[in-house]
Length: 164
Image (cartoon, rainbow, N blue to C red):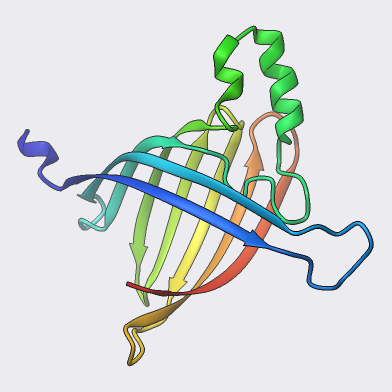
């Protein structure tokens, strides 16, 4: 038990929605919901700046706004049907995951996440600005999704403003 004194459990519910940047015929508004559940062990090597997270998450925004992830859900379902997995095919494209992240200088963090059900390895870099007067900060993220089963990859770059 002493080894896990820096562990914390979490549950996150996410909801994303939006629409096209320009009105085009056939462009639709979208919304997706998802969640993740897991345990994070903090203060790991090197220099107590590492974190290991084990959990389960749904595929929120894995389809992407441009319409397709590294292994599209339809292909994943076809592959799953061949395996005859029964009820597991109805779990919202969910997957167990394992992630290791490392704090870097200048408010940055790098992480690696494996999603075996999606056959994806994610490499991510996040940078956070300093807190502003209202307690918020800007977050810039770059995520490279690498397929484990085919020579495909996708780079997602985004930014957001968050207040805690």
